[in-house]
Image (cartoon, rainbow, N blue to C red; front, side, top):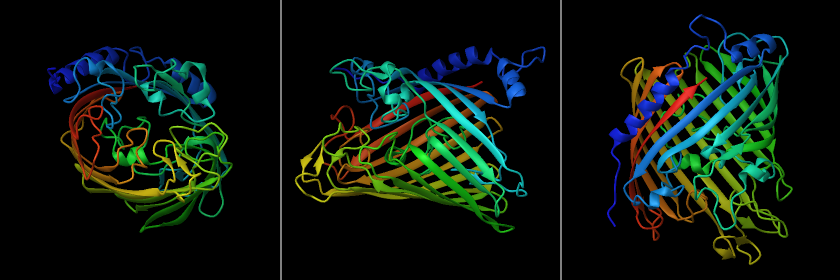
Length: 449
């Protein structure tokens, strides 16, 4: 069968058409007469900020045929633009009452004086679209009727859209020492360099995500404390430590807790960032209970530890340039006993480790136009880290060229050309198991309202 490849120009043209429709709504939250929008009125009356995001994308790879591309997730193991053709990634709403603090938990300490007043806030999100599938949490929105798939249909294998509540938490700032915050609820773990949502396109320059992103913990349920450890002219250092139920678990299937934590250092001019973050805890399913697939593949009556460690850096060597990098290491333990079972490979699971390295350079050609280059390699010799993106063991490599164009402060267009290939492998991961390399062209539109 003849393979068809949609050129980047087609993807860009479709995205521009979507931009023109979105731009007609205005960009500053007010109409032409200067009146406040309904969202501004809510914030003015209650202090609660309501923000919205629309993300739509289009993508194509050189492996699948036009007929195969009609299915879902045919770009995997490339994630972000997981489908080929047009996809609705997300329609997302966020409700936010920000607290006054000298740090943003899970993100960064902030310069400036230490606030000496107690403050509190909350944050909640609702998401509908293709991104709603990985955003679900076991035991909560994963059980909602709208997210059920037809019998015999694997989740994500068609173009079904899902509803999720990615975050819902309360937080408080305490004027103790140099500032302490506490948050509780369901929230992003903050472990790793990439972040799941597209609320702030700066950290997520590219439409597609790294293999490191696929391996790192996403959401957790529990509590996290953050405190400023150092604040002077040489820089700012914040520490974090939390107790949570496990990876994307509202009610953990092994009754154990996990630890998450981080050290975040910023230079005095905030131009250099260094983050070390981790998650540590047992992730096995207890026997006799329904396995919490795909988050936890291992069944065992004993604890099987899962560790993930990330060291990330951001440098701003000049006004127009930014450099980012991350090195990571992780391990899923397995004691090798016959009652320690990997759902995919069977009894006697002995565990496996993984490691990755990714780096990217961004250049700002003008106030509205940026270019980026990303290189990455990810070694997963036992196939324990990337599931459900892929269970194929080996080393995955990728080079991505990207462009970001800010049409205005509310509309962002991103396009990219990505080349992936495997090394040290026995099975093929691309094209539904038919190829060990892939070229993918993608573009997406982000509309903030």
